[in-house]
Image (cartoon, rainbow, N blue to C red):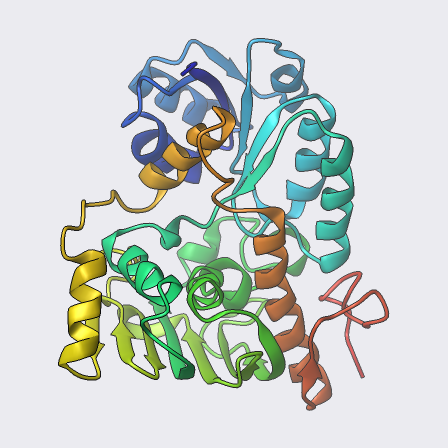
Length: 357
């Protein structure tokens, strides 16, 4: 297996990518360059991890023939142009969420992928950890049975100091609020475990902070399976919690409540009876621990690039999560239910920030 040479663009969350995603795999990745407009942060991160190449120019990164992977960790408002440019430069690309700010933007990226030499992997690191992966294994084995109902809660706390960063809290640069920047992780976990959405009724509001974007939201979903799901999210919780509780015919799953690592154990896996429990034990009784978050997602990406596994997260996965965002915004604007899939005829397809009457 070859070592992939990585350039980090954006050293905020990019530092976590280094610590969790690349340093645990020295036989698979080497961070050879970092890019950031903040020269002080460039110096700090470069010195901390002994990275020689430091630049404020994204073009310099794309022109560097030694770079195999461009890892985009910049503010959301520029993801689209940077992803398309990196693919055009022949690089593999990793991009933080949200991938972009509209379904039209995602479809533009998917068109660019068709002729690109490299592969794009969006980031959804909350899919990884012992708890969620056990649940996924049980569901895929057919043990859980039909999905009945679920609840997903993203109860976080973000106060004015968080929004002192100039690009946060603004439609033009953050692209959205709690639905886009925070709850997107939990909502992807729901789709990963319970399948696609059929209909959405949602409400959004700005109640906690003096910002442009929403910091509270709720939605009622009808899944394609027939299951009902409720979503609740706020940035005004006095205790930070991330929680999924999913009820299937034979099993109820409940995540741990850690706000930023809900995929980790312990998860409650409650079997309907002893026979179901025996089937679960046969599937996960000799479980080998899985590292959470970026550590496992990056490992799986390297396996894919080496021809040893599937792409762990696809642009299609990112589109499904952003389609749900689009539907909630549209429903909140119109006060009516939205039926999925959302096509180019939707008033929110080109830009979910556009007001719908």
